[in-house]
Amino acid sequence: MVQIARVQSSECVNLADIADREALTVAYVAKLMRILRRAGLVKSIRGVKGGYRLTEAPERTSVADILGALGDDLHPQRFCRRHSGHARDCVHVLDCGSRAVLMGLNQMVKGYLSQFTLSDLVYPEQRVRAVVKHRVKKLAQAM
Image 1: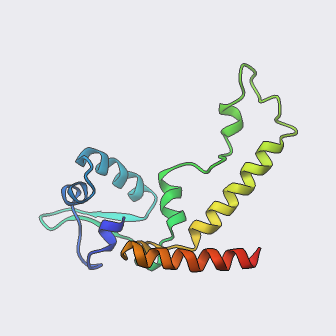
Image 2 (image 1 turned 90 degrees about the vertical axis):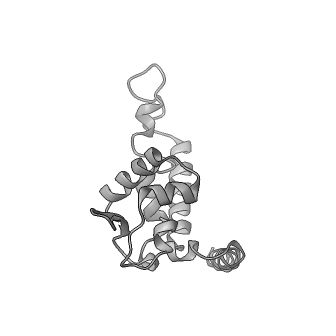
């Protein structure tokens, strides 16, 4: 997403260029782009000058949106079913302190990641660190 955000909004970035810039395989980048396309974050353009383009301006796409498209929450709804041991349902299904803590943490992480957009990530690390420091300080004051 960062590689696509770094080009003009009217230009496309092809899989090979993204893979090369990120030191990933083309097959892996294709898999990621498929997921991001299904989530509506990128669109694919066919043709000689085709490739991938963002569906929204980088400042309108949060890091939470991107990571949400690529993976599960810290505590997805099906978590308890996947970790139920030998029983059909988890023995703590009706009363689980862990679930409450993990759900709260999940909300905090999503809130934090929602403060950052794709446009924040295209800058050099030093600038991004300053933005992070400022927003973390703001968050701490709100708590």
